[in-house]
Image 1 (tube, rainbow, N blue to C red):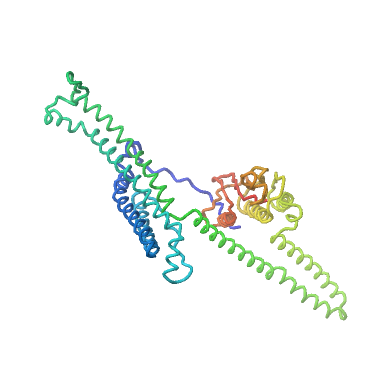
Image 2: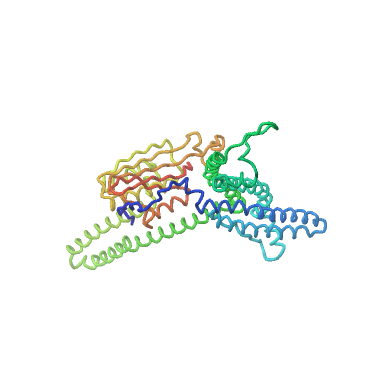
Length: 462
């Protein structure tokens, strides 16, 4: 397994870091002003989208009696998807939110009626229309609140620069604090400037976090209503996982074919030739023929061992007969590095998961033997989950508890030089992809200098 066990050097911190605290820089940062601009633009956009949605619903409902309402509604939903594309672009530009487009329309057959049916059946189209209705009240609130909050904050903060206007142009000695018709209390301009500036500073400093909280709701709306549905994301993920499984199966078939062609097949061909020569020499030189038969017998033993190794690489018999614990113990016994195996399983997982777990440990131990330079290694296997929910997916046991069946956990650790990573495109990357194809997970903790701990998590499906 070609896995890079290269040492990673830590990058030194860049010189010249910011000396001003992040809280004081936030009101002047580009992110704050982009979010404020997004909140200000939301109201005009929401007004257009809300008017469009109300007009669409009203017009299509009124035209239903003439059978024109359905195509009008379908065309309006397409327009709503167009507005959604503009909103995703606005969120990407101002909020730095990258939301992929929803699943495309897939009409069952060519023709306008098929397109109309595809639009009306698309959940993404209706979510875009719902977005136009939901956005309006929220945008109205955020526009008024954000604009008022920001304007008041900066006005109070800059009040010490223009407080002289109050006595000069209003005819008042200062800002009025109290008045009951007879007694009027004014604050001096200096005190007003200090207090107002302090209050304005607090508001301005709080502004970025307020805008961040408000735009977080916008992010949720865009991601939830204008992006792909969770089901569509799951379909895309399964299609990708299926491709990984197909590629892995094809690679395994090519490996088996190569091993048969270069190993056992070539050896058997040579064996057949040797036996043919021995047969010809049997009458003329019996002793030479006996030596050739003896050599052929040794070749047969080697060929049988190669076939056993190949069969073990496909699926070891001990795994099928005795389970994961004995199979991993046998695997550890063939590793040149001393390996301690701890298996804590009260029952066996699904055969497919059991096989993936076995070959995962096999590849990790090969990695330890070839690249780590370790003196010893440890393999730990356990079941992380509720034993009362260990039934297969959809079984009465699992359905009755309402809890998942848990996960099969594998931990392979060694005291080697470390530096293993899944980012180099090597063996660990391929292993992580294969585990991901069955909803598994691979986590590598391997600092330079070691030790290394690789945790694999697989669905139980027992």
